[in-house]
Length: 150
Image (cartoon, rainbow, N blue to C red; front, side, top):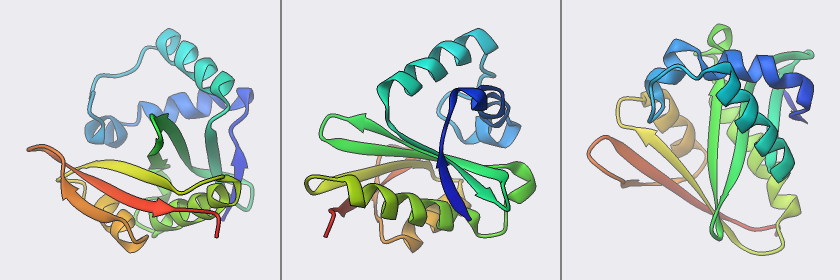
């Protein structure tokens, strides 16, 4: 697996992944996303120049991961294409992306991941990447990991 930056031409692929039924079910807002809303959000994220990557295997897109700035922390969000789920790619995409961003960090940074309690696959992915797990609310956990560029 390799990572590449999200580019404007990925808008439809990202839209498709965002509206995948399982992705919507595991999101905090389960409503389908209208295309116009997605387009506005997508272009805003591109302009923010966040760390946002498409994971590929043999040049086939298999997942996506991004790091949104949340004050002095980074919030990670990822998804695996439905055809590639159950193959351990969630663990790998998180690991690769953490390695990539750690090279760019200027100081120690806390990475946060919010996961619904019924999302056992994501819970395993964060735990296997060395994140600590805490209660967030009745429905979800928060995973934390401090990284630096050492």
